Image (cartoon, rainbow, N blue to C red; front, side, top):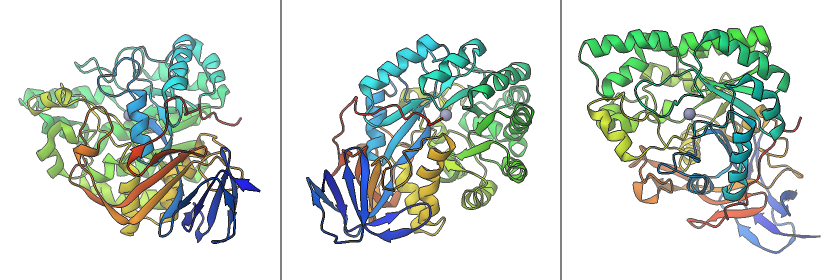
Length: 458
Ligand SMILES: [Zn+2]
């Protein structure tokens, strides 16, 4: 039998173990995994000697900005960053314009992705219009998304039509999503508490990015903890599959541990900024709004790594949220006027591989958090694992090479990264999506339109 491509000489890493093997690709799928050096006939061989071969990362939380905000990012630039970063599937969040909160808008967005995505993709539809939910669920999506955030003077990122903080409306959304069997992703936030906290800062004349950072983490993360408590209680009442976004406080970790013990349909994610960026006050002093997603006081850092290791946090997603420098600059004087969020799609796999090299997590658990667990949580039966028959979604990584992260190599349209200057062990040398090489030797080789919707198996 002849294969299309063979990756030879590498160490295959799965969620359950690592071993030396050659991997053969047949069409879009993994055709064979055999002992190193087994003679295989192939159209092409990638020599992975000294490299690790891992399942491509599955990022279920990314802001690709198209349609509506293509001055920040678009599907081609976002999925180029994915390809370069070893990400083979990326789910788009719905805070675009118009937001996909109706069937018609979702269908239009799906068409855009079919034409433009380089890697496999899906769209987390906005679950804010209950009478649209059942039909939107038939479009191959894996999840709905709701932000519990309202606009605080900006028209982005929380435009009308996607934010809900009324508890009754949230309950209605949970009830409506439940029969679809799909997950409901929620950005936890408590606007009533936040309003009071913000007014305190403003009354003292504190408006800059530092004040903004402190406000969102005030009272030991009270806005995050109370919102998570509400969401977990709504989940218990309805049985809806809940995916909790932005895990970052010990308070939420404790709640998740209790929920785990009850075996409830809850998953939770960690975003890279919570352990590599916003957890260092020096970054926020130095970079202001450029370092904010959110400030995560350092006392949370060790508990977060422990929760990643022990399964309390199920998976890692980027919360890739590019904004232009012009949109960040106002933060020096008014943190509330700067757009919140930081880009991460291109570099988070190397950063977490580096953490594994440094012994923070095992390589196997890292692969599970980046690929296997998200595939399992969102029903992507063909993805997230290196096994015969699975999609050949693969990253070849070199853990002996160091990557220096710089603005120059950023493929996101914004041209900057808050991780500039960081040196990490773990270079993505090649990325394959369903057998096609989409990134190799520092160049994106995938074509827009190759990416396909990663539909859950139901
Ligand atoms: Zn986000």
